[in-house]
Image 1 (spheres, rainbow, N blue to C red):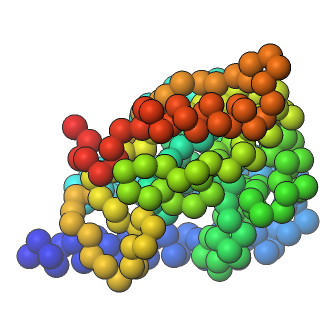
Image 2: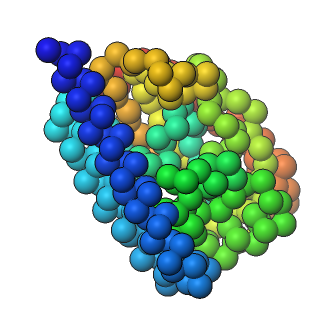
Length: 248
């Protein structure tokens, strides 16, 4: 019965994401002329926030997925900043969007081309990471309009027990937009949907994820963006919890 219950909840969860993902993609095609309007993107981000908040609340009630990202709520009324985090699984950006109603995520272009995800990403003004010139200007525009920017500086999902080498784009954006960088640590009790995890592999439930806030960084006088990026990366390496241990 336990196995049947887990399969049933998984099917319901995937159906929810697929239905609303496709629906948002269809809506986005109808509203193509408004894609680049900041006011329109802000509405899209709030809609996504509500849909994901409902989604994760339902899964929490099922006791199969326990997500505690309440620490991120402290950032809601703070001035715009770049939020960086380790990246243990594919759902990390969704966890953040379920807590912050005006959050723009930086994502790989292949994710933005996915028929389920591209509509929501376009409606929300999410930014592809592999277009260097447009990336810097798009990120700066978002931050200058007082929305938070979520960026995973490793550029891919984290490897076990240690973060990958950081890409330095986040530091360049922080310098250009003159905003701080907020560190967030994500802990998990599973490698589910991590690097190398097969989509067909069944995880051990419940899945547990927790976010904790780290230091908020400002560039120091005379520090270039490469030095700044290295300082932040070293902080992560020195302070990141072992995310394979179950959160308590």
